[in-house]
Length: 401
Ligand SMILES: Cc1cc2nc3c(=O)[nH]c(=O)nc-3n(C[C@H](O)[C@H](O)[C@H](O)COP(=O)(O)OP(=O)(O)OC[C@H]3O[C@@H](n4cnc5c(N)ncnc54)[C@H](O)[C@@H]3O)c2cc1C
Image (cartoon, rainbow, N blue to C red; front, side, top):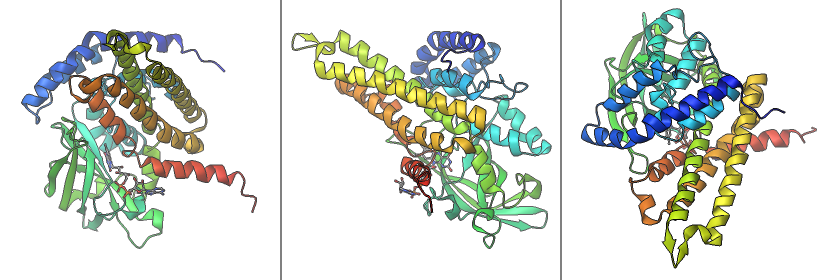
């Protein structure tokens, strides 16, 4: 068992940490001022930092393909993704933000050459953004077989009708591509009914009905939207892989991209613990620093233990995906999906408490970071469903029937 990072990764960690300190943390305030001024525009600071990151080769770090990205394994990417996760504005600066990372991997693995020419390279270049439309307001979408949107063949085209919500990036001014999951054949067997299709954001009949908030945060500019599809017509060549292959693609998409959220949350929790320590040693109440209160010291100790536990589990999962593939790592992927967002929520919440009333304001990164972490107990499927997967796989070991 080797817990060391390679020299190459150590070098990128160093570069990334430097970039975060020099540019990202100071930019958080500027980002907020710019986005508050105009929510429908990508803050200029993001575009400026994207150029800087590209120049320093801190770009597409997530992509295992060495021609198009840095060619890092999941284990190698984990500490880098963790560093980016320390700030909510960082991932987009390095072209490593969800859901674009998952969408780029999807296009790389399943799209035709023509589809890649149309969309993938622009995404990899950071020129455009994309969204993934699966969840629907009218059905329990944790069970994707419930999805009702119809994709019907008509001559040379497919016609799409349905309503999606929680489409992350839907509000992004640069979002040009929607990957839509829907039924091409409701009479087929359960897992062959759905397909995935590429829909340009500006196609006639695509309507952004509203922007959704998460605990009051609209998460601009990439916000989450409710989108209706009303007789949206796209050429048949926009279908990915073939009719009835939507689940197969969804499974593939939920591979590596799926654990990036967990990697990022380790970084968010780490930053919250740092803030907790700094605040508690500098704040005096009842004649002594907060850090000398035993209940607070216990919180700090437990936070350190829980972050390190979670990080090890994430690294083990990353290693397992690298070595055996996503399917064989299902149990571990499910475990971190349950444990890491809960750990992050708890530690960020403790840090908020230590900051007193200040922790609830946007003067600190904590409140938005907590809302984001809490959302991630749902965003990649509810943690209750991942728990069910862990229980099922565990019980299977004892099923001798
Ligand atoms: C911040 C955020 C971003 C998102 N981004 C996207 C996106 O980009 N694209 C997209 O398509 N969707 C997105 N989603 C939606 C997300 O994927 C769904 O909310 C999720 O899959 C659950 O579906 P649902 O909301 O319909 O809940 P339901 O399916 O109605 O489930 C409700 C609850 O029932 C319980 N439950 C359900 N099944 C089980 C089970 N088997 N065992 C135990 N309990 C169970 C769970 O507690 C669950 O929370 C996002 C959500 C959030 C919060």
